[in-house]
Image (cartoon, rainbow, N blue to C red):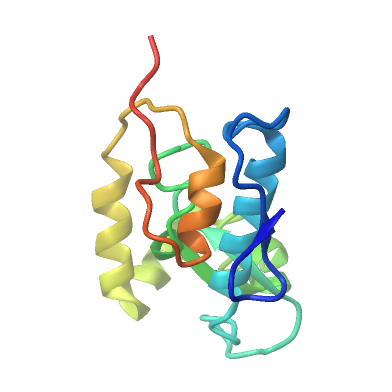
Length: 145
């Protein structure tokens, strides 16, 4: 196992491992690291609470082009992310988008632009993890036939 300068991040440098760069192992590691990066905002973008923070995906995770982009994330309290009947992106997406457009217009514009992009590709989760860790690598491989 190789280790970078962060004491909490370890990774395998051998792409030929049984896990492979497209495996669930790397997917979970990249997802977790992206979530941690989004939550570094330290506050709910809606109410400012510092408790029970979660990382919301502005564009659903199934969109492989934005799945691990930190820009695609928004730090929200658990309540506002999942349960609030007036603002939760999962319960009332239209109201959430209205709030986002008014409160965070740059993030809203970014989200609208990205939603229109749909290029199929296979994600190299190991590279996604390394990129989130601060390494300069190309995140996505070319589409597979």
